[in-house]
Image 1 (tube, rainbow, N blue to C red):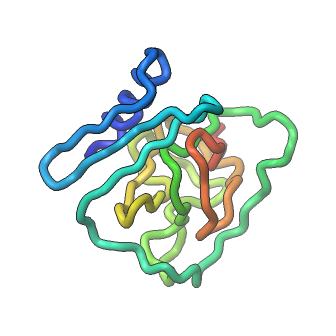
Image 2 (tube, one colour):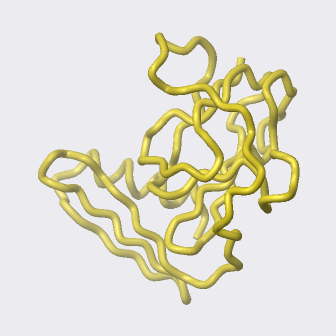
Image 3 (cartoon, rainbow, N blue to C red):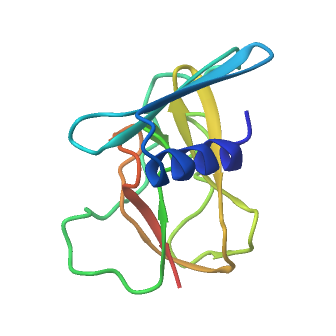
Length: 147
């Protein structure tokens, strides 16, 4: 299922009084629920090739507990596990100082055994990586900064 569709569904859910929505598209399905705390979670299911669970290749990262970021902050579109590279022994998709164009793959978020590529929605230069390879991420969590 296209990540843009999932993001749009989340936005629609947040803008409405509906507390839960479930969509089936072929073998894939997504269930989005708003919990009593107001937090929205998306759970995707389906068949895809899995990312090795090992965290062999780590890229340098900075923690998110810093001051307000300047530039365009790329946020997680779902809850899952952040991977900076396609496989543990491959180089990361992006590094600090690297120029990216809109549509370039920045990272992968694994959710329910589905590998979801996160693409740049703006062109620029990667100025910060805010997440460690192999770490869990929440919906809306800042991942990278593009300036």
